[in-house]
Image 1 (cartoon, rainbow, N blue to C red):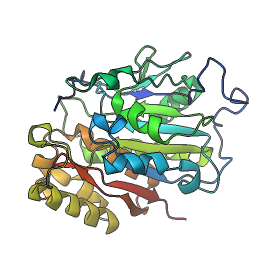
Image 2 (spheres, rainbow, N blue to C red):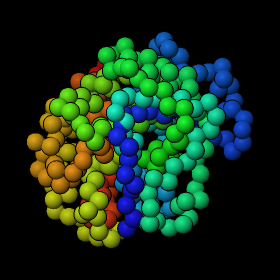
Image 3 (cartoon, rainbow, N blue to C red):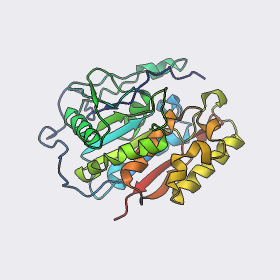
Length: 312
């Protein structure tokens, strides 16, 4: 099985709109940018495990059918989201950054050794620069600046694969990538990312749906054939993960490397776990977790996905 390519060290974010198949903006989007004041019921936040890039084409992966049937408008709140803030595990920067794209985003094929048909898939989502700048504003107000503006990077597969499967047309969405740098310091752990995304909690009251996209387990050296039995260590970690979230032990989740069984085995690098901390942090300390999907592929890839509902 192919491996994902190496990523530059960095923390970063993208903003996009859902493509309509031509260069027209979605109906009334220009007049309906995400507001900077609370005008809608607060959205729930979600952690979605996207697992293998083959999710984009392989109909035998159970999680693919979950993504295809998953409707944000039906599960995130009482109203459809005005925007989507997607946190992916595939772009690392030295400092926080937002992707401010005023045209259409490129589709990044940040993997190799996969079927040729995957490299023909396109997700040319239009940018959402106003939402990107709102994200920058909140991060800097929360003490996480300065935030760099990136005006060229496209969408990696951690963003475009799930978005391509789940997002309805005409939903104005923002894709944000924020990961831990390779040379992580003591304050850039799970707790750091949890606290960082607490700064973005106001977006939930502005009609913005916050999604974290990565994998509940991510050890590429331990991947097996697609339909292999689940490895015992992976199952034990995934069960601990579920119990900790549903039991409200969020501090344990933030410190998973020392608290979880096989934490280092499940995530040799924590980049694919931090989007979870982001979604969790944005929902708040007293949020309630709910598992919305669970399946496996390749012996060690868990697609466990969760919803976080803030306390009223």
